[in-house]
Image (cartoon, rainbow, N blue to C red):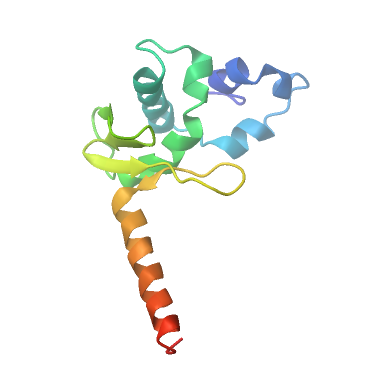
Length: 132
């Protein structure tokens, strides 16, 4: 696919009026796996047959997730979890959207987030105990 990709062009046409491609190149890789997963995410979170613009909204998320699957699956299975708008499963792995901060925060594996929290709690306990 050429840059800017058709999805970025559909979502953000004003960014590419002068022929620039940097915004597309910085946002995501030009990788068929990214486009396929973004399309699947959009079909779950937007509508069954998403428009190119809707797929563009998920390119960064897909780009941050695809490398967790090596080798890539034959087919992406995505499920929105009912208990939270910011939790979803991709091929049986739960992801969460990080909150807070400014700008874009990519989704992370729930298991990674919990591990980071345990490590932070352990560091805080050490500091409270005067060992830090």
